[in-house]
Image (cartoon, rainbow, N blue to C red; front, side, top):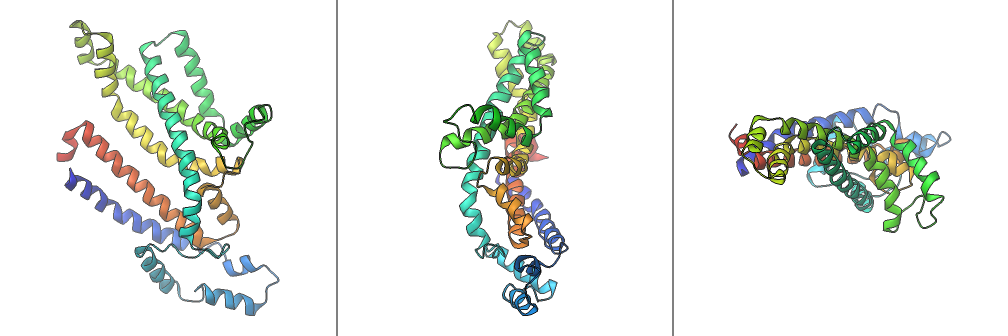
Length: 305
């Protein structure tokens, strides 16, 4: 198993390097950050000093070599806008995004898998029809629009639920519901589909014919066999949660990584953008490795392929 994990990690390193090179080049095509930060009325001397202090006057290959060396030391650079280390900004805001993403993922998995499995077992019933309608609706509503609806319809009429900001669990409720709504619907529909396929497999019909209890047939055999597909979907949605958090954090003024990314783009703070992209890439790679390990756990044959 350890050799399998090591192979998966090593195979992801070229992807990591490619992302670093790509984002390094692309962010420098947006214009002169010195002129943008200082403003159009800044003197040429002030612009030259700013470029010198931040190393922007050096050749691109020298800047890239310096940046790559910093990454190996764990240094993501210094923000042009905030004049702080990107690692410090990330450490300050990461807990907020982690709280939001963790609660949203928990809601998505518990509700989505539970509803999907139940509606598959009771396919064609009233609950199944209502759940499918709500699932389509949940996938159709844009996240920012649902967030605004929640602010207008819930927070305004329920005084103890804040409309934005952070500070307590109450502040987390609406952003988590808004972020998880789409994923609940997606996971529920996919779980239902996987369960229906599993329930029609030959070995499931054999289990029914042997007279096994319904709980054993449904949950021990059909549900477990459908987990591989559900795990794949959940893993891909874990990475999508980060991109969805950008919109949700902006709507609810949640001080997380997503809001920092939006502000960095608006301020053309390319050092912070680079750092965030690198961190997100590492997060995606780690999630993919964990998914591969989960595959190997449920199907040990994968390790020997």
